[in-house]
Image (tube, rainbow, N blue to C red):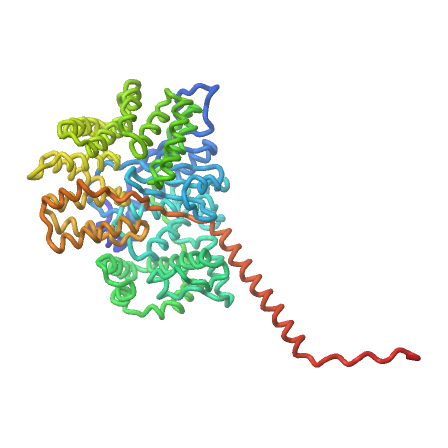
Length: 610
């Protein structure tokens, strides 16, 4: 049995770092990396292939060996994160597997998305279609022996993948949305975990974080004090040698140091849990910190400087058994590979202009590869979101004629009928579309019960079909949504629709609590504004009829929640370069000032005979 943790996820760290004892009690896991060959015409095989493990589906254009190692490491990290964050005794519910795109070129991560962050190595997006990740391959991921865990250099590919996965896991499995420093510190803390076959080391200093903290220790100018860190005050600070990107890096480095300090002691871990609870209930970050820890933020500077110099220690854990990834590999036809990234982009809540461009891309793919299942599904999704949902119906029916057990095809068929019902001016046609949507979505959920987008579509369909008292169909859809949100809390559209349905069902207090996390989510201002608006309506008093009318009339926010992971080595080079240029400029100015302060040189003596 695992050691019992407090039931609320804001108290997740009351039992953190009891991980060594908890891991030691885990049952042995299967130790197998299976390879399954799936057919594909060798003359038309894509450079992209598919790999699947217990919790992830990876599409990659790298090598099979690299993907195997990555999946094995991510499965071990997932296992560790569940011990840190998931309360014991929580009822098991089906979980959707995260889809991850593992790119051979870092630039591909940035080129796929609107307004990319410079030097990005990873991106996780969460939208109504669910969460998906994009990570770049930088260098070979080594397999470490027990003796190498706390000594080998931290390879950048795994550090970036672990950082991104830990941040995503915190958003998807807990309701922590504030403070920002803890979310970043948590991600940095787990970026440096390393696993061998049966051991792990936790708490190593990330390479570039250590480099930046050492840089500051040399007396260099800093950009943030710890009150700035606690309050997440980053924007508008121009003191850093590398500008805004350097300020962000300093924030992450100091967030890691503060997180490491608080996780290194049992009493501090308990106080951290209390602090997170206070901050989650709306108490300002500094006031919550003073109340939980009994110290002022100004006292943290010297305290953490000493911890960074003398107190950073890694913990080795030998649990006896760590899970191994059970990997299935599949080659993909050229046509499927050609549609992969267009399909992924459609699930990131693109802007209208980007959505129309993706519809054009999908239309071109449909003309070139009319019989490929993914191409047809991609074009159908593009038509539903950015074109004419009626044109998606024949595409989906053709796909289901070839593969009746395709859950995405059933989902999109249900979504197309829902969109047609929402725009129909004929009541009989509206009811017919809603019935077709319910049948298709029931089949989709029977095939893939954990898919957040199908759960959301089923909930919206039940709302659209409701009239008067809460119907059994809506009650069942609401129960499914609540169960799904245990591991899909980062799907903001599903969380908002579920809170609205809770309010309609007469559970106003539960709805208000669900809206708290959404209102604090800084990644999606549109969603946070909607959550605050609904909270205000609940507090003022709102009838069930008005709730139902608002849910039918007001579209859910259509923006994506994005979490970028940046190449810190490049940022650190920019910091050092900025310092060097500033130092050189200062030296040149000093030399000029000294030269100007010297008395004028005497005239040269006359030349002989002159």
